Length: 313
Image (cartoon, rainbow, N blue to C red):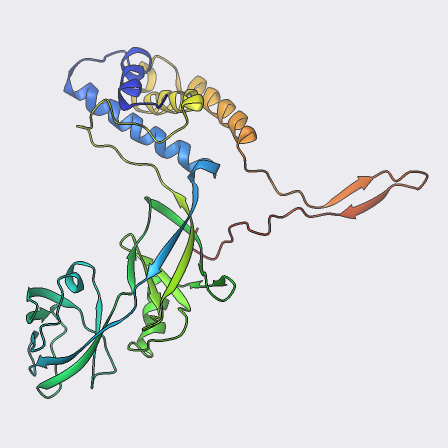
């Protein structure tokens, strides 16, 4: 049986708060609930929040008759090849004759007309150009908060290196129109993953290992909304709510802060031990060999498929 938002609101009203009436109390309950779920998710790498997903990198698309005008963002395509997804999904356009930058459509009027985004004015001579559209930005899956590893699923799971925004942009600026081959680097921006270079016409897949974040619920969310937490461990969530309530209410809290904090930490420690993740055992271990003297042995148990820290922490 799933935990619902109504369950948590009832707990707030009956246990965590001395005053459960009025809109102010309702809003305060939602602050406690959202803060408590964030606290629980952040306090351990629970098995249930570590996920892997696959992203299909879409192959490039091409056109041959893009009419550009010097010092203008307006463009037309006489072969009617423009698509609205180039705007909504933020595809990059590589235009023949311009190797120092990529363009983005900011406006889609029809399959034969549109405009580049502001700042992407065509500054070379007017003319008709061939062009290539590539998608280098993909939505992160499933409310991902920490991407822990990205790898190319072809070529034996070759890792793709994370770069911070500024380093990624600088790396890409050396040859912004490069396509083909394997993506080498990625960055994370605006809840999207950006890859470089694009594999061109070749179809590729990225495997992403990530840490899922909690869903932040609106004040007006319905009681029937299900909470993304295991029902059998709901008492940890309850104790987190009590702790958040104690922080907010101070001396007026039904459960004083020191008691709420201790109760939460004790239960957190218990469930950390029960969760599927196990600490890595390293260092000398005394092993008693039959009829031989005891000797230390360095043994390291490590999961060969464990998530690495290629991405940002």
